[in-house]
Length: 239
Image (cartoon, rainbow, N blue to C red; front, side):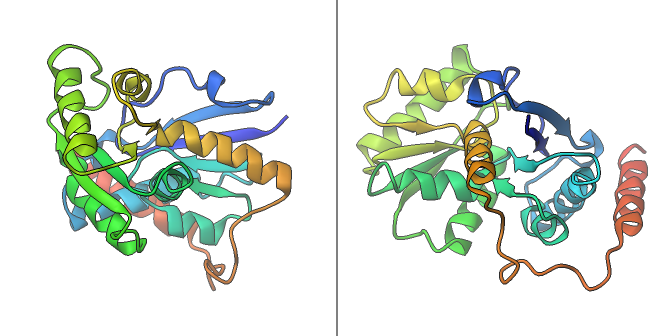
């Protein structure tokens, strides 16, 4: 049976991922150190990249068949694709590209702290022309009720009614928020974390993994250095 490693950098995340896989796959969730949280600037993103790389660089030796990065920010995706031969599936890129199989234009709905990163990825992935908007809502990760849900729903409706989105990508790892929003909206809502698991299963079934032409192997692997840098950041963050 396949073993899938889900890495979460931002925190939170779906509590039950069993329904997201079709096979008898075993899903293991691994969260990075809370001391590296932030994610609002390029400085924070660099630390998140390192934290995710440290969390996943040993996936093959641990017996995992694929790695899923559940945060929309795609932290550490490129580095892990370079050091691993097993498929590495990133939530942000996957969600936006998948959205274009369901509609002509998509919007990204993101908690306020992730707004700048989401805008950056839309441009980097060459999807600005197909992106109707990126809208933020003032909610903490994992909040799906009361004022938090109301704020997310208001932003989601604006994406559809004002911006013209055919599909929404929910850049949040909170439980069931995508399903709750979809029940109130006339368009599909993609849950990126669960999508990565579905895609990982399909890649394994088809015998596919990332291209070495896009992500060549490192000339010299330095896993100990990566671990040391993350450990140092953890010590500084704890002060």
